[in-house]
Structure formats: C-alpha cells, structure tokens
Length: 250
Image (cartoon, rainbow, N blue to C red):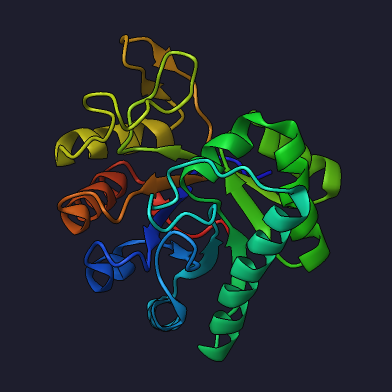
C-alpha cells in the first residue's frame, strides 16, 4: 500500500462532460476516466486518454453501476455475474483507449454509489477485486481501512489510499452524503488548506469539528465542482508552498 510522504498524487474524475477537462489535465497527476456507464462514451474515453498522455498524467478507469440516468449515484442491484461483466467491459474500454493513445491504464477507481458501496460491502469488494486480479495489470484506488482495501490485499491487487480535499467528512471517517448542506466544498482557500493538512499527515476536520487522522497516497478533486480548475490551481500552489510535490502513485 502506498504511503503519504513528500509527494502526493492529485486525481480527478474526468471525461464526464461536465467540466473543463482541458484546463484540469495540466494540474493533476492521475485521471479517473468515465467508462460510459454513468457518463462518457467511446469518443470521450479516447480523447481523455489522449489528453492524459499529452500531459504526462496517469490513466485510470472509473467504472460505475449501469446508471446513466442517475449519473452512477444510485445503487443498482444485479446478479454477481452481471456486475462483474459490466465492470470488466468498462475497464477494458479504458485499457484499450489508453493503448491506442500510446499510454497504459495504470489503475481503477470506482465511481459514485459503487465507490461508496465497495468501501463497506465485503462481498461486493471481493467481486470487484476478482475482476481486477483477472486483468492482472491494474492497481485500485479507494479509502483507507475499507472493505475494498481488505479485498485487494486478500487477492494480491495493489491498493492505494485517497482522501478528499473538496468533500466533507462525517465523524466516523465516511464522506458526508451529497444531500447534506456543504457536503461539497467549493471554497478554494479551504480546499487548499485541507489538501495541505492531508498531504502533511495532519488529517482533516469532520463536520462536528473533530480531527480525523488520514494517511493517503492521493488527493481527489472533483472535475464537476464549479470552478474546478481554479480549485486545482489553488491546491497545487498550496502544496508547493508546503514543499509537497505532486506526482502520480501509479
């Protein structure tokens, strides 16, 4: 598992058709590329991979539940075999596009409701990591001390931890649901302050004011947040001021 240090990764969800991807790529080190089941299509996947290669950004697949209408934010119940097949086809689409662009897919980060479920559901996490293990060439990015981390370790899949500079945390260390007020943080100074605190091992303040200890290899910034490029630039500047370099974990 990756460790926090003088270098931290900045990952961002891209290829979703919601933000200024071209402005974000030069500011990040890893791109979570939508695979078509919550957003994106073959054309956006290919373009995202080309932009990643051009900017020296690590390429990650960002698979979701089959839920375009809900942007992947709704849990979908389906047979294990169906879910595994859907994850596999999404990951393969990014792997193929990355190769076509002259790069390589380096990791997988699940999206939305699937991401949240995989942090707490041991059975589903085992299924997900089985798909990755069968592919044989991808790490997985998720939250620390999660069901997904346990499954990855059990199946020999490289696991890297992330934290969120632009999302509020509940006292138990989970992300505040987007339905709650101020669950998504869009104040550039506050996001930058939280990013530095996480990167330097000081953790993050929860919604009740308690400090949550976090160790992370990567910081996530959401590409669909209003003003995302400005937030990313503020984070980069703050990290540089704290002598923390930005570089991919992959």
